[in-house]
Amino acid sequence: MHDEFLCHVTAYGVCGGQWVGVPLGTYRAPTLPLALWWLRDRALWIAARLDPLPETAAFPEGSLTPVGGDTADVPTVLRDWCHDTYRQDRVAEELSQGRLMRFSAQDETTEYELMAESVDTLRMRRMRDPYAMSAGAARW
Image 1 (cartoon, rainbow, N blue to C red):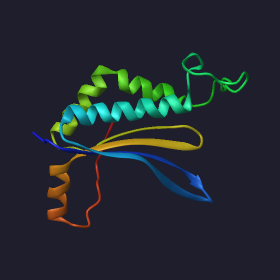
Image 2 (cartoon, rainbow, N blue to C red):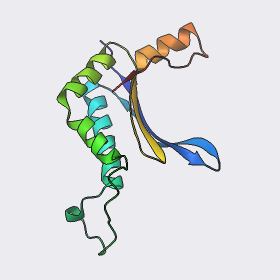
Image 3 (cartoon, helix red, strand yellow):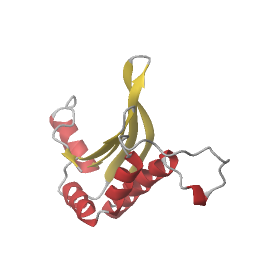
């Protein structure tokens, strides 16, 4: 059983003609339940900022408008991922077995990525090859 997990949330997009990543948070979770909680919390945090619910705060009239039907709905994808018990169980299983977990949602301009990995796995990889990159991440 892996006991400690490193979690990251990053937004990627094009800026000045280059693909760049903007860190939105990192958390070293001392337990698997806290890693899962933090990832869900960050996903919901992103969703709330991309798609605020008008009834939860005061917005000036006309400041929120619906997007077209063909626009990718990242907030809904993130919320659905958080509330999907099966997918959350699979994430927990992957992490507890020492595998990297990666989930992403994207629209026309930005990709939002949530990642977590066992600290033990990271240490073992660095001991084998200090220049190794993460490969074969499970996508959820």
